[in-house]
Length: 162
Image (spheres, rainbow, N blue to C red):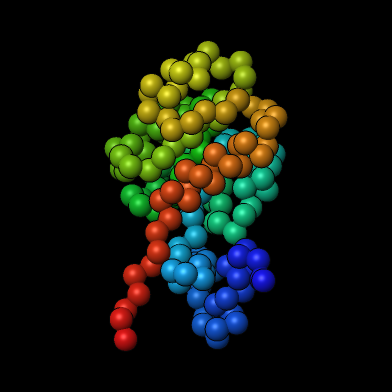
């Protein structure tokens, strides 16, 4: 039996179909859009580390400047936003509010330094779907939670009937 992941990666090619890189293939449902995850983190090293951790066939887009993220953000463009809270110029809570004004449904996860004064519960009450402290020690838990939120919004593509 061929593993499902292998089928997910190669089925479009085996069937001679040319799907853009933003799609996956499910054996029972057909093509799926890949999840799009935005990471807003001013520290370039942390941003690259998070992108590597989350490479799972989904599209991960990094923003080191929160103002650029807010300017480029569009409703329904990302399935999850991972947001650093303490950043120069525009802090994460301000970026959170700007993002919510544009898209009330996208899950937004907070990532903070462990010394940040806002607690886990305060961030969840503010509307974040989850919170992790940096440095992230339990990478597998982080990855599972992130991909769970991002994957929950992934939907099968509409197929035209023949």
